[in-house]
Length: 169
Image (cartoon, rainbow, N blue to C red):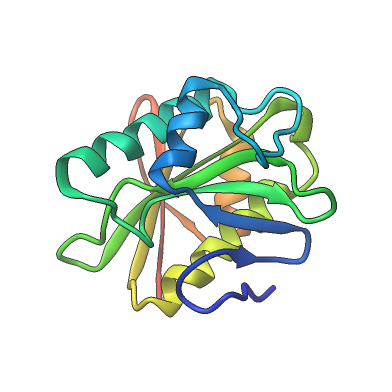
């Protein structure tokens, strides 16, 4: 699967558009109040989306918008509706590595959207020259572990609560 859209703006995959949120769009997600033109599937945003987007807004207020290493809204291409989000915990570190997180509303689980979105975002950051991506999931979150593994990330460590995944380019 190839992500299109160059190295800025939307990332397009076969079934999805990964749209980088502006701070104005992010504020609407956090307040759970869609604006004109926003298309949200029922159940979006959920608590995970609000938490992730709140972190993005905190980063913006402290050190500016980390674009293109910010937060992306996952939208279905078929109807344009937002169904979740994914993004980074900030700009690449000294090893040119970023940490990723993602979430889908419950009604969209099991459709392969998380895997497709993660693969698209991995292609984007690779095109930007990032050398590695990390992510993690609680031991009980087997679905998220499968998403990372199917996107090419490997289990690299674990502790009593969390499994850690990574990919190097």
